Length: 327
Image 1 (tube, helix red, strand yellow):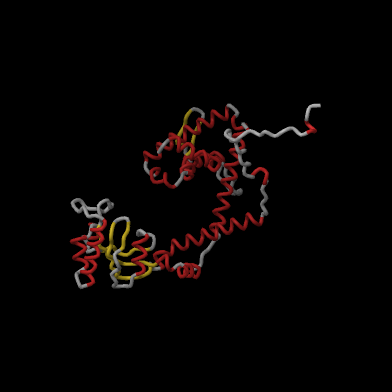
Image 2 (image 1 turned 60 degrees about the vertical axis):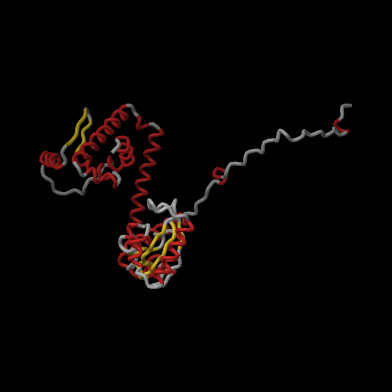
């Protein structure tokens, strides 16, 4: 964790950390001295430096403001101690800046106002988001409307890679023509009854799937290179495709099943996407209902630069008119 990163990240959240909580409603309380002692025990000072003291509640509130990627590290004592050092340094800097009156600097005030508005806007966004619901019927409709996205193919393949292919194997220096001819010959053998799995184990230059008899398992759209995907999804179950050329070489594909990813597996993703769509629609509607206007002069694109004169162009030889002649 870089110290500068932590300081900057915390600075963005500072207003939330230093905001004073509203007092609770009046209620019967113990004597003032007992109450103060109890509060001090429940929220002890855990760091001091000069005039700066930091209580447990302040520090833990600061921890919660940091991005999720830091939380795992901060759960460890060493990570918390490192952040504590950064947090204390930030508070010392803030203390010195306050002594110098920097809190009254116009630029600092502008930044604080912007940070406050950003935090309030974030809270409002969370409130809107929490009020958005997605019904099971909407999820099922989205699943049905985009069924092709969840289509899967289970297939095997044999790859014959020519020299220069990313999958080319050492000692197999086939030209492109030779690789294609070999693939065509293997396909003829398979169509004639040869065992696909055995040929894949023996001949395929995709050694990973080749060891499994060419088995690629199930895959969806956009998981294979386009030429391979098109041929695999177009083939019927049990069909061996014509030889397919890709950047890796020449493939023989055998399709074993067409199926769909079960709804339960993609339900969380569909629900998340639908909520995002609704959230964006709500934000767009809020903006449109406010009838925004923009200063077109300010936001207009800059005028194009003037076209420079061609130094090679002939100079004008226009003659003076009678009205401009010297009398």
